[in-house]
Length: 330
Ligand SMILES: NC(=O)c1ccc[n+]([C@@H]2O[C@H](COP(=O)([O-])OP(=O)(O)OC[C@H]3O[C@@H](n4cnc5c(N)ncnc54)[C@H](OP(=O)(O)O)[C@@H]3O)[C@@H](O)[C@H]2O)c1
Image: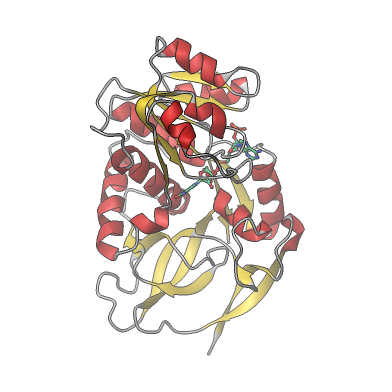
């Protein structure tokens, strides 16, 4: 008998109201696939880009890139998962805003017993992102204990994980956030310094904090609003690591600017290049599970929503009302 699952679908790019709850048939997994029954699904800013069309997507589109639950069926050729396993993922194709789905097994990993389903659903996309940023997206010569880095939106989902992870590496993370309360939260989670970038000139403050030297890396997911000033925060040969566009897409820029501002490097990173193979995904997940299991990084879930209330979740994220991670309960 074919099962069905409540699923959030978008038929046309648009605002939060363009998401609909539909009941979709869910079949058996094909070769290389599994069927997973979610206990929780993660909410991410990328879901907003895909819904709105900032990242154009084929329609109709089942949204959502992160989840955790129990493996219910396994297709041929899948050897690393079996029926009954607790599992979690951050993965393409989208479609995690649902109770039950069939998906490629490649990006799904076993979830350690010590990590709950909600935590697993909240942390995979955001935690693997913090992992590749702080561990692999590095300036020439790498990062050492004591080095300064600037991390925008430090009180958000990726942000609070990055604050804690940076502290555990001995880095001095300067975090920006959109209110004094959010700044306090980032400091509680390990940011060495914070700047309210709605009320302060963050480039001037970074110069002050670093004694005029600047930081070795800027991790920038805010995009349009922070791009120019972020370049002014870097020391010579510093790395501008762009990884998002919460305020809008970074406009084209003159490459000569990088020379004039101190022979800077620029990269635009995306998680999905890093997790292209099962081996790479597992290695990154192992590192993430280790920092969470040790308590060095705590996954803070500040918002829970029922699947039917997904429009409210998106509105809250877009209005900068959220802190830490958000999950959907299917
Ligand atoms: N490239 C990748 O591999 C990758 C992977 C994961 C996430 N990301 C990016 O990383 C960022 C964080 O993701 P997340 O899911 O954890 O979201 P989040 O940080 O919880 O939410 C985004 C935050 O961006 C800040 N922001 C600044 N200007 C904004 C604006 N005009 N509108 C809305 N928000 C604004 C807000 O914090 P303040 O109020 O404190 O400014 C907001 O809370 C996103 O840009 C996301 O796309 C990229």
